[in-house]
Image 1: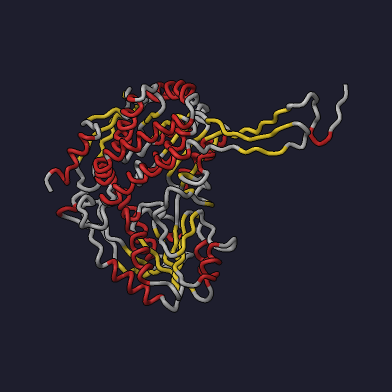
Image 2: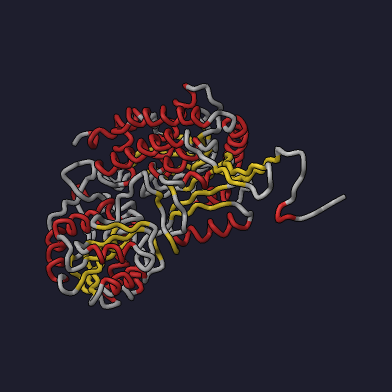
Length: 514
C-alpha cells in the first residue's frame, strides 16, 4: 500500500506537477489567479495544486480559440477524425494512470475510473467513424428545375462546463464530437477535480503538437462559478454544454438564452427501478445495489428509488438489505472494496441532512447510514450506504441527494400505478423496469410509460452506452450527448436551394411580373 497504489507514478506519467497552470490553449499553459489545493477524498492528503484563471487568462484563451476555429474548420472532417483517433490511442496508452487519478481525486473505485477512461476511448472511436457521416439531406423542391438540400456547418467555440462525478468522460463526450464537427473547445472542469482537467489537457496537447496544429483547438480554464459566468455570458461561445445540478442548469440556461446562445444541459436525476411481481431477483439485486452504491451514489444515473409491488416487497427488501451487508467500503484503489468516499465533507453533511429529513417525514431506516471514522477513513468522507422505507411524496424523495441513499417505495395493482409513481418527480433522466411480462415492459416503454430520456428493461438505471444519445427530460434539462445524432447540436444547420433553370419561379406559385 506504499505510494497509495502507485498514484505518484500516475501523476508523473500524466505530466502533473506540484503546482499546475489551470489555463491552457494546448502546449501554452499559464494562469495568474488564486491557487486551488486538490485534496483526495480517499486519504485526505494533498495531491497537487492548480492556479485558477483570471479574466485576462480567460481572454487569452478565447483569443486563441477563436483564431484556431478559423483554421480547424477548414480541415476535412475525416482529417479532424484522424486527430481524434490519435487521441483515443493516447488514452489507451495512459488508461491505467488516468483511471487511477480519477479514482484518487474523485473517489470512485479504480474499476469505475478505468471504465470512465474507456468511455473516453469509446467516444473517440465513435467520433472517428462519425467524421465520415456528417450527413445532410436532399429534398425535392416545389419549383421546377430547382434542387433543395440541407447541410451542417461547424458552429464555433464550444464551452464545456463539467461536474466532479465524471471528471474526464463528460468532457470527452463533448469534445470528441465537437472536434470532428469542426468546433474548438474551452473546458471548465469542476474545481473539485482540477488535476483531472490538467491531465487531459496535457494528453491532447501532445497529440495536437505532433500534428503541427495551432494553439486553441483544445483549451481549459479553471475556477469557481465566476469563471463559468465568463463563459455563459460570452457571445463568442454559440454553445454551452453544462453538466451539474438542476439549480445550476436554470442559471446557465437563462443566461445563455438571454444572448440567444444554445445550451446543452445534463442535470439532476432521480432514477427509479420498478420491480414487478415477475421480476427475476438474480437481476434485481445486483442491478439495484450497483446502481445505488456505485460511485458512492454520485452518478446522475444513480438508482435513488425502488418501486416494488406489494406481493414481492418483503422478498425484494430482504434480498437488497442482505446484499448491503456484503458491501466493502474503503480505499477505492483497493479493488477488494466496492465503495469509496463522497467527494468532500460538504457532501457528507448533505447526506446526513437528507437522512434526518427522511426520518422527520416518516421514513423508516432499514439499513443505517453514518460516517465512518478512524484508520483508512481519516479523510472523513466515507459514509455507509443507507436504505430508507419511504413514500414518493416525501419532500426529500422528490429532490436528488448526491449520496448513497436508496428509498424503497411500495406500489399496489397494475404496472401503470408504478409508472405514475416513477414519473411523479421533477427529474427525468434514467429509469428501469424489472419484469418477465412483455406487456408490462411494453407499457413502460410506450408513450404512456416512463417519461425519462433513458428507459431500460431488466438492467439498472446506470451505465449508459456510448452509441445511444445520453440525457433526460424535465429538470434534467433536455440535452443529449454522446451517440445517435447528438452531433447535430455542435453544428449549425443550413437549407440550400439551387436554381439551375433560366427562369425565377417563386414558391407557392406567387407571380411577381416586372
